[in-house]
Image (cartoon, rainbow over all chains, first blue to last red; front, side):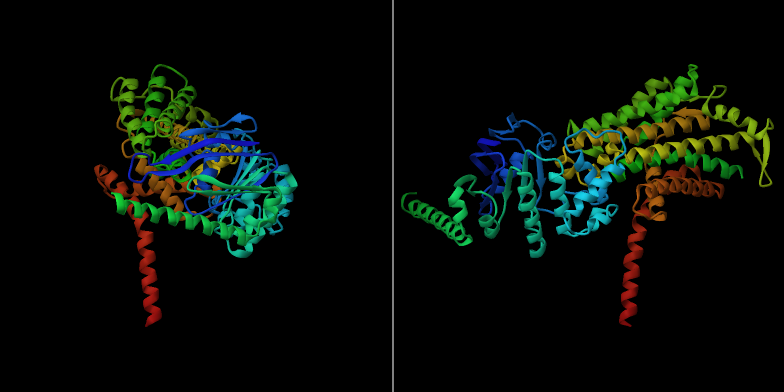
Length: 270
Length: 313
């Protein structure tokens, strides 16, 4: 169970570049729920994920995960509970190291690294079995450096690494945005398979209306650092990509109205 | 022949310095300036302990530990106090100059008539070479002392290299290598990258101090100035090794460092033999590193230009 309470974050506070990225977000996610987050550019959807992962600390508000208050935990400590896949396929794996070495680290996520042999035969066997489930033919290339693989292959491995040990929460940050359409489709299939198989609590940010409509059991729409829509159950099931686009249009139009109205008032009174 | 033996021995000893530089610069991508200070620190600690009658093995071990501590200080300055990497190293290095003077009590300690690892090596190899002061090596008369020291140094350096190699294949070593490769990924896998960098710098400077301790015992004295410019020396070896030994694996990289150090020392010995003024040595070293860094790139662009011209003609 993830609980975000009144989370506020302002970047570059007090400078001309000040950005109020999150303006009091409150969100509670049940165990086993798959939540999709969408929003316009700069709506704070990725910032929300980074806030949960601990890339920075809150100005105000708290985050509870699995009953512990993780608000003040550094990123690496939260990683014990949280599995992550990044937008950039290069972020999730160490390119200069082999597939096996990368997976060996994931197999011990959250434990202090010990002085014991990293690539034990039993672990390699397990690596081979688990990689085979990706159906990418990577199980015979355990000693290949990851840097030589395609973005899709790297994202698949990152997904495998993030879920190697069952995380209390899986964070997916537009993890198909940098991939070609076919790889993106494969990664979405995999995501869906893994999340369903392990009943993982998942928070996924996406820019694809198609993914937003078809994946997950709950949809959260963000705008200007706030949650503006929260659909679940039947309402979420009935949702079509067109409905979402229409909704975005409405938000945008209201926005323009706000701005032009402000301008009109300024002209008249200032 | 004596020249060859001497330069091989120094090359081996300084390969540990190069190994330390490799760990900091290549594995962690951390420009660690502590080296000049920690090399002298190792020499100073070893010398003062040897003079006060401590056994050579204990003295060498203590010197290594002192280097580990120096590296830890640099690591903490960077990770906990958030000081720029280069400045962290410079601060430690500068502070160490005074520390080294304090440890030694004067600027130079002679180890004449003191039991050192070199003397131990001689005793150890006595059954091998007999008691004569000289022996014939492929028809050349050489001091049996020099051969024994070379032999023992080679064994010691190979052992250290093997240990370092094995260490980097452990879970901790793997995570440390990944920290240099992609710190974001290491944090996402639940490890504190700051701690990994600190351990890495401790290890690197431990090796550098070990190198200093061995050098002191080989040359028979410790000098507070002995570390100056040594970092560039280590880097030169790393770069030469990299240009010679190409291959992805860790084993290749480590043996490249060793070969680079040996070759570099040999080149220096030859240059000195043919009349290079020892005062110019650091300048020449710096120029060598410069050339090794820049020439490959220039040659490449040159080659490309030539190839394109050829195709157009």
